[in-house]
Image (tube, rainbow, N blue to C red; front, side, top):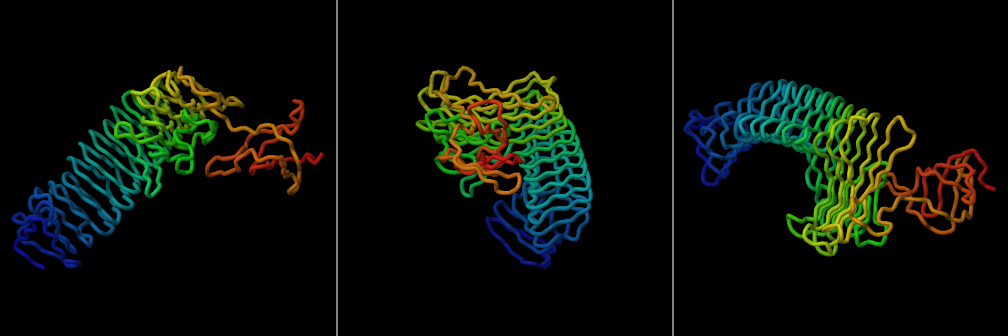
Amino acid sequence: HRFETVNVVGGAYVDFGEDRVIINDPSASTIGSNSTLRVGEVDQSTLDFGGGSSGGQLILTHVPALSNLDLSGLGTSQVVFEHAVVLDNLIMGAGSAVFNGGLTLASGLAVDGGSYITVNGTFELGGKLEVLSGSTLTASTLLAPGDVDVLGGSTLTTTNMTVSGSMLVDGSTLVGENIEVTGSMDLFNASQLTVKSATISPKRLYGLDIEVGGTFTIDVSSRIALNGKGYPANYYSGPDFSYNNGVGCHGGRWSKSNADCTHGRYERARFAGSAGQYHNSDYPGHGGGQLEITAGTLWLEGRIEADGLAGKNLYGGGAGGGIHVEASSLQGSGSFSATGAGYANRQDYAGGGGGRISLYVDDRSGFSGSYTARGRAGNSTGYTGGSGTVYIMESSQSDGHLYVTNEGYVAQTGSTPIRNVGRHEITAAQALSPGVWQLTVGDSPWKATSAAYDWGIDGIEVDLEASETLSSHYVIESNTTNTIEVLTNDNLAG
């Protein structure tokens, strides 16, 4: 189809299907605001038509026959590519581009001028990626063979990102789930690393998993912010996204619970915090989020936060989330936080329990910062949630360090329960196979082992003769509600 000019305005939607459209005078043509032109294919000049200032939408059902694509003239308009696009070079300096079938570039890319790029699928580059000057890049999967810089108030959002070079986030925001950086990673100048908020329908929790081969630096003004990114209100609970089974609980109990509603293990923080009760956007009652970091060195001057958010009324605030770190070296003077929340203006509203923090490091002699996983209420005399747990394991020591403090907020008796075997009468001992024994007790005191949810008492050493202290100890491999399984060549039948 050939035209001298094309003008699609006033909310119109014109569809040429799979056909190519040629416009002789693109500069005199326009796609108006809230209007759409859908075509099979166009040339470079048509991509610029209307001077890019009209704010309309151009949809391409086929990839233009261009190795170099210049979208710098889009202005306030948007171009949508319905299928996969493969290019040598792309220039993006204004407007919005959507690649619904993925994008492959032989070169690097600078997303500049406050522009927007969305890649629904895989975005694979051949060089350096820069997101600059308040621009926004969203990609389901991002594969970068070189460095990645996010600068000047820009935002990069991705589900899975692999960076073979180093990464710099400077005065900007990174939203992700699975981030792998071969080199170093830096958060500078009030930068923030976070995740999307959880959803109820479908039930979806967004955790954050970061692997950095070199040094991961968070400066004093920057943070990893997972506050309120755990289980959503009202009343959704970990570790299985159940409803109303563990309100405001995680490492510590919700302040008005007399039952053990905690989840997870102090040895390994894996889960987010449970929610309390929603009041409004200022007091949503969500639990804290879940984070894992693996790095050569973690240099923390800023903050790593996975706090619950304040709620209201009987069920109060959310519980603190989970933070797990594995690093050769921990340095700096920053802070780790996985605290529960109450309601800032009322001491008689319920407080969420604290979360869990676990750190496995070779050397933390250069770290002078803080760790907190306290429970909380409106103030120190209110209904305070139980403290969460902080566990630090240094490779030079055979056992770890357990820190439990509520920082002056006095909690109820037994509000930080630790999973335990207890004392029970053994009613049967059976060899299931050579070296595998099953022991049965008379009651049903335990929750059965679940690797997915960290339920059970597996991993704990058990003494089968509690009346004295000299007998052998056996590590529990798994358990049901009333049996434990241990590995030993000893004869336990007697």
